[in-house]
Length: 349
Ligand code: KG4
Ligand code: ZN
Image (cartoon, rainbow, N blue to C red; front, side, top):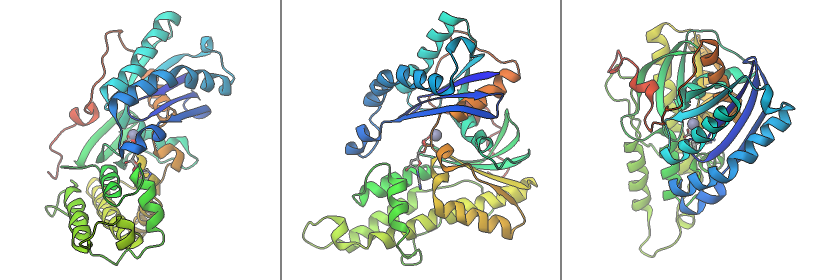
């Protein structure tokens, strides 16, 4: 079965062709970082316009690299939420038009489902059930995944997502967008113990996160250091130490809560997903702490952590295998149905 997966929920236009749920024939990503970086974040209106420009060439390239004509595709999979509504509509409308013209069936995929399964695109594949930490620009949630289509929410952020915290702190420090890679690069030469930023553990049993406190702590720290004359942050702050200390505080909480979730649910396997899962320190810490606690840790290849079409094709493959297709009046949604459809509050909330 050949699936063409299409992703346009935020600032990446992506398409991939996946064979039988395992063989990735192509994976094309057009990033809009150049467009949004001067604004320090994604501008929704610009994102939609860029998706309109990119979607056809990206899909054509994915088909051509895969060596597969459109007529041989068995199913179309498209992200229809959560995300920026205008951006999602570009992908969904494109797929509906292709489906109408070619009679190839299509399914809508929840973006989080794509992230939750992205680890299967790499060589190291977990068995079910597993506990997955999804950390991206829009989400910080822990799920129990019992099969490719069943996810139970165990905890989530009560305010900012981890990636959002990286992006906001980077902006405050005068670093480029997206903030995650910029902070990680500086953190590599900083001292993670230099500044004791707070860890938000919340209630003793809670698997929820909160990142607004650490963001405020960085704002306050920077304000305290600021000299009376106005000069750029890089000239009076030790950016590597701030970045390393901030990154460590975020990673520690993410890792310890994920371990707790695995313990609570009796899972042997832990999976990381989402853009922040590309963070080397987070990957190192979860591997270390997972091993110490007797868990097997599975990390997606970094290229499958950030948004891509391959994970959407994979989630779509499982939808088709389960016999799901969609009607032409299907709409997009901005908030995750994976979360809305879960038993919430979770067991420890
Ligand atoms: O999954 P993703 O590509 O898009 C969303 O679904 O949000 O994640 C993007 C987020 C951004 O907030 C970005 O700063 C963060 O992932 N990110 C990182 C790293 N690479 C990307 N955060 C920390 N360290 C990184 N190396
Ligand atoms: Zn994402």
